[in-house]
Image (cartoon, rainbow, N blue to C red; front, side):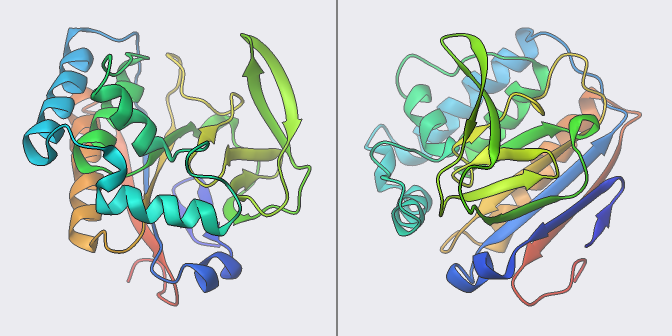
Length: 240
């Protein structure tokens, strides 16, 4: 598997076989510092919401071509898109409604990038990962740590779900629907990784611009951080 700093990451052949145009943009920052949401991170959320409105208006989020592509993909692996929404669609619906929630500074940053660029983005604490991380089709029953009514619970995933997983269990269900609590970014996170999920017709240029914006935001916030990035795609060597 390819190595990005301390992260081994892969996409299973069966995922690329079913969705050959899929690309996973990976950004791995080390030596970052996080903290509670502040005026700056809240301003990023507001600005991203306004930029989306300026570019796309207040029409149905599902009409955006990238959200439509994700709705189609969800249906193809058996998850009703009207019930399960990719993370970008869920954020955009909130942005056009009551507003984006502030979580912490780094989560606010990547959520702002996700909304402005209309792309699912997930962030995980690298120190909590066990072994390598891969995108694959679940056999069913794999461990997923989450919350129910505010309390921690562990559930099994459904067979056929496309999931991100490490050696300890599933880190994100339904491709980019919900992240687990075990690897979530907290105010004490110092090493992280981010996944940008792109499907056609989303272009490589748009994917690169979104990844660059996140990296630049992290550099401004954490000048001493070390950041590496790459894109995983079908039949193309890592780094090409």
